[in-house]
Length: 493
Image 1: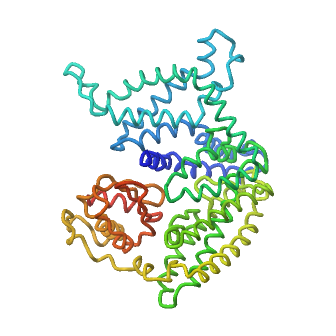
Image 2: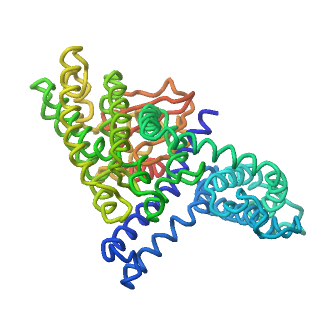
Image 3: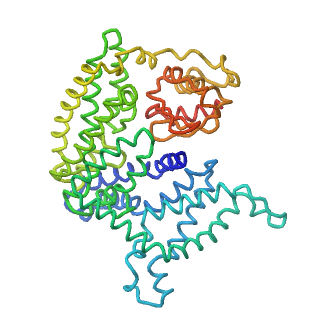
């Protein structure tokens, strides 16, 4: 079950990956026409409408993205099944269809069926069911006279009938489910700044497991009525409120974690300072510019777990403070400088530059707290023991020492080939690999025998961390170049 949820979290990143495009289009559109919001400038109107087209169809993007991302072979046919499933269910359950079925006026249809076409939660449900159908029936073989509809072609047909049955169930269940989700969203929103702080705290605590994506979907998208990202970039909602589940991340990712990196550098032993500095500087710049923090977080998450709990608490505090003062900004990808600049152009943003001031305060807080705790407790953060040297070690062990890996298949002129080769060695060679996948910054590998995994070898390739969230399941934190490393590993295997 845990492995399934982790895979679902990875699959979430596929539809989420299109959000930066929406943020870029909307940010530029609002910057060009800050008063008319597209009404006073044709180019601005085009950009805002183009960005809105993405946000207005997030539900269908989740249906397609999850169906594809959860499929066993990542074939485009699975995405088609997700699309078909979503269209069938939403058309059968939309308000017009319900009014016709019941023989009543459109105005008499309940609110639950009025939002069926754009509800991300329904997109998630249909996407997951579609993936399950694809994985189960994509190898179906039919008699010769129906052979054309065998295999992958059979799945959309099967899905149509399954979705008709699902629609019948949802006809009765959906109003109850919707009202329950809506009540949950109202309860969280009713907690105000405290709710934002609790969300920030648990978001960071779930990072090691990869389950934070599921939590994010509750607050960022239209699953329980909050839809913080969509409403912010659509310039809808209440100024000072919309964006409260995003704004507090900017002081942490742009300033707080770089402050922690500086503290770890200053507390590193003299002989290890250069090696530690190169790792920490690169990670801090990545966090500041893009909001991708995993490389930096994993540099101390397992070496000094107490510091990570402190980091989670400070993140919750940051979201609480920003929400309390109603300083709001938003992001399409993550809370880095690029998204911050774009979000300041959205009219609904409220005093976003105060987040910079808050960030400077958190830079000092992180630096002082991390430095004191590291010194007092003598924590083995990067540069305070030999582990930091592993990331700087040469990767020249090569594949010749690992049975089943062809030395000639890897181009050692390419840094991704070298890294993939070394990680593969640490995972026990290609014969120990079951599946290879990845999300934003980490490889997600299923192995045959976890006893063959050697963390030291993996870290010698420059990996920031190794996690074992489940049996025969390992996550390797690589960083933003993870896609290139994953593809090279697949080629080697």
